[in-house]
Amino acid sequence: MARTTRRTKTLAAIAALTAGLAMVGCSPAGGSGGGGDGQTLKLWHYEGADSAMGKAWNEAIKVFEKETGAKVTFEEKSFEQIQKTASQVLDTDAAPDLMEFNKGNATAGFLASTGLITDISDAVEKYGWDKKLAPSLQTTAKYDDKGVMGGDSWYGVPNYGEFVGVYYNKDAFDAAGLQIPTTYDEFVTVLDAFVAKGITPLAEAGAEYPLGQLWYQLALMNGDRSFVDDYQLYKKPVDWQGSEITSATKTLKEYVDKGYIAKDVSSIKAEDAGVSFINGKAPIFVSGSWWYGRFVTEATSFDWTMTAFPGADLSLGSSGNLWVVPENAKNKDLAYKFIDITMRPEIQAIIGNNGGLPVAANPSDITDVKSSELIKTFNGILDKDGLSFYPDWPAPGFYDVIVQQLQGLVTGSEDVKAVDEGLGKAYDEGTADFR
Image 1 (tube, rainbow, N blue to C red):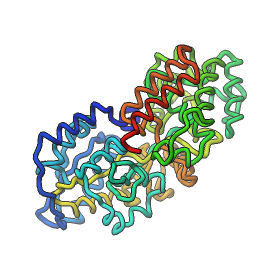
Image 2: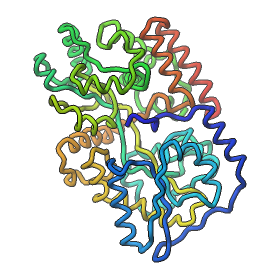
Image 3: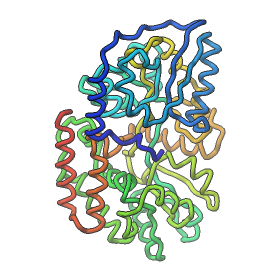
Image 4: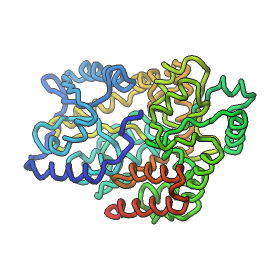
């Protein structure tokens, strides 16, 4: 999805959260109700009723109420409402028993490090959720005492995922006599072939996230899991003049110079890039699975497909947002039972058959052809432990830095070396407190 769930908060936002904590007094930790008649599970999430997750979780509510005898009180909250008020509300008796919250160091990690959400490691072991989640999905659910993901303690559970791949207009390829590429060399050959026909092949946006995601994917082509761990989890210092970064920045510049990307990319937004693919103007779009459902509905004038980035062992992506249990929750055991229901194959199948990416579905339960294609691609990435998160995650405010630096690169106001230095300086400053 194109909303801001993939961005870490800015430093100002974190400061606001901290200020919010100072405004409210500490309350005793919530109890752990055991379920049964007369009890109520207070649930917050921000998925639309017609979304894949909204449909699945509505069904989970029905199952939960039937099996436990407890009732669910669902309070509809927007993404921004939960993000902005979480620290204040969670420190009071008004805290819900269970809520959806954004994954990442400056979001779920921040709440974990301040004691506002519960360490649910015992529940994970009891219900076996760790057995259902691939290692790269587990990373965003586990945090250390500083709130850095990839720690030893579970603070949330995801039940859907997302990734960045490549969308191809199959009709445009057929008209040009080209095949969908399966290797990176074939991908470049295809780009050259479209340019030779006077077609700008890549739908891109430099004013928002897509260009930064392409840049990070190019870095991953020369990186491995150790590079990802260093970049995302601060295992070792990142070499911003090393081969992974410099090759990505240099290649992105070449993409513009060779005409693979439009010259005015620095002013284009994500919506414009997506629409150019939908309208058949650009035959290739590198972006996320959150576009998939929309393309099914709107990109109906031509045949299209989506694959992982050709030749890549590592792909951008992560778990979806997390179910977290506030420390002040009054009915924690009910919360765990609800989470477990959302991990059942029949509930996961609802996510999968409505354009989402379930993490624990039975493949045979996915009956929608397009959805099955998407899930197969995602599972292929998971099987290789390929999810590598997003380039802006490591440091608060780094998203804006990436956008600005890459705009300078594609307009020619900054060269490769200067861009890498600018990115490295902001990254090092933004991650200093985590390392």
